[in-house]
Amino acid sequence: MSDYRLNTKCVQAGYTPSNGEPRQIPIIQSTTFKYDTSEDMGKLFDLEASGYFYTRLQNPTNDYVAAKIAALEGGTAGMLTSSGQAANFYSLFNICECGSHIVSSSSIYGGTFNLISVTMKKMGIDVTFVAPDASEEELNAAFRENTRAVFGETIANPALTVLDIETYAKAAHAHGVPLIIDNTFPTPVNCRPIEWGADIVTHSTTKYMDGHGAAVGGAIVDSGKFDWMAHADLFPGLTTPDDSYHGITYAEKFGKEGAFITKATAQIMRDLGSIQSPQNAFLLNLGLESLHVRMPRHVENGQAIAEFLESHDKVESVNYPGLKSNKYYDVAQKYLGGGGCGVVSFVLKGGRPAAESFMKRLKLAAIETHVADARTCCLNPATSTHRQMTEEQLNAAGIPAGMVRMSCGLEDKADLIDDLKQALEF
Ligand SMILES: *Cc1c(COP(=O)(O)O)cnc(C)c1O
Image (cartoon, rainbow, N blue to C red; front, side, top):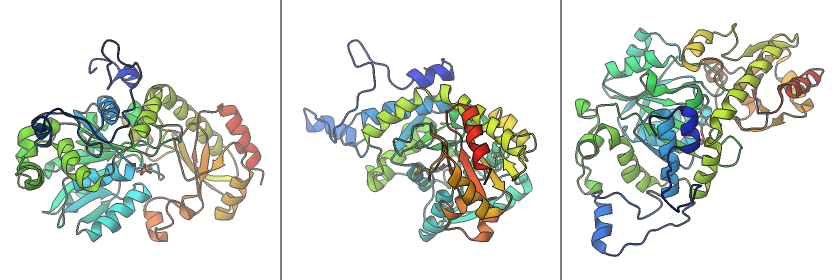
């Protein structure tokens, strides 16, 4: 599949049926798998042979879909998780432990911010947050001897800052650690972070990849490029024998291409168990089959709505990376070739009360704690997804209390603009 173009991979990568097999990915709704001899099964447990024995570790349906996502991102291996939260946690926890430190962009999804700054801190993993557009010097100053990973979002949810991936990758690699990029918003259709130097890519597949608001899920893809053995002292979990898995040294046995995902599966997923259900993986694949058709329409609608709002006199400011007035316009052109997604945020004149009246009047756009599906929806982050953040943290993340985040769906843009027009007559 690696020779085919992205559009073809969306439809066909990951699963190639042989003669007489189902055309559509089969849902293997089985917790367990049958073997003739204990010896056969023993080989699987020793990771001597590849195969399936228990769905908490691996399931064929999930593996087909993970392989498609890995192909789309240009990685060597992938895995599905039960949610985007699990994907980000696993990707970090696979290489961090008590006493480690993470350098992260300050402009990230609220759930991830909480995960890193509160929950992982309780596990003894420290973090230094830096601006998404930090200079090389600012980034370098954030590293410590115990730094094990750098984290950022291509397009941050909901601040819509665009990460300078190359600068982040350079700083990470100068310190011998990988760059992990959450690529949920642009999807591989609009950006492939591995091509810009990222080592690990994560997704909340709940968003555009599923695209229909049907199934919560996550994914992790490994570029296969990070040389763990070259920095063996920093990553003992990958470069020394795993006593909990028959003394296997992942980086030796599976190489750069397979070590990260094998460890995340055999150890982290085994112990923490955030597996995606095969049913959800099947639904996710239906979304992936049209991702390349849907994403351009999301971007087209996002751009049209951003431009309409920018010209409206009740609107104080509009934030969309595809607008020429946007601080990240040039970075967005470079990495995303445009606005990159269908999410637009804006601040109405009159602050929070104006935002509330406006949202109440909307007919097509529903109020939802969700983004990135076929139906247009909107939300006030300060009173919902980001309500655990202080006023100071909200401002640092670029989310003023009166902001409305609108996720432009796949409806006709003229109808969406008409809906906005009438709602703005509050
Ligand atoms: C939604 C989201 C997450 C969390 O994903 P869930 O599937 O809701 O757990 C992580 N990162 C980004 C950028 C998101 O938008």
